Image (cartoon, rainbow, N blue to C red):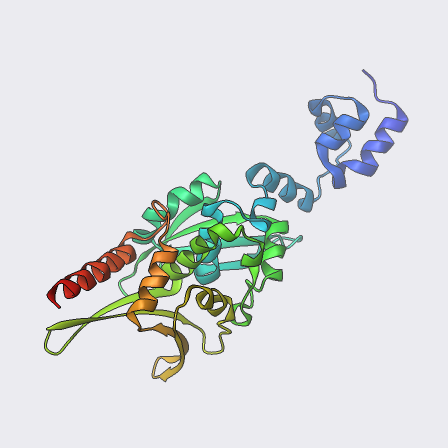
Length: 284
């Protein structure tokens, strides 16, 4: 079927900004016909349109804005600690959201990212001690990137309240993501190995606003102490938990329904803590 002058003018005015599908519907022509005609007219899709269409086929951004999925709650915690929001090296500066960790940890959480349709690659980190193989999961999406930036994912020292948009019942998955990213369960011996001492530490930058975490800890009766550190390696900030009851309250909270959404090496420290406390109780 021949193209009319009006149809050609419509295609010229709308193709680059609104894409093939829109023009196909409005002109009542097949997408292949739209594509062939646009090629003959040397019309090109705007890069923003291409990125937006690709992203729509990959994820539903609303699932990240109003979180009801435990997996998304968890990976947003991981992204806060070990993630970045950067920009593609193109004219449209499309945001790229990326999570990076050592491969041995990624083997545990890769399935979650894969199920959520994130892309993946490995690279050698030759600057790190031991030259670890690093694993990165990433996605390019303007709407999600801008949403995370508005929640301080590029200025993390300011803290975030992104979890206010979570279903309250799954916030503990977010906290576990924070712990798996920047948390550490320390077990040390005291009095020549007679007793063990347990503590939990979250680490961040020197000027970190910890309210994003302490607001949650206060609701589950966890006592903590924030410490500013300076040494030969630089400056940092730590949130420490030493009290046994507080450690148990936090772990019971964040490890609830956590199967397949956790780093087992850290979870095993929690099991060690529970077993030790049970043993000490029996010995009293």
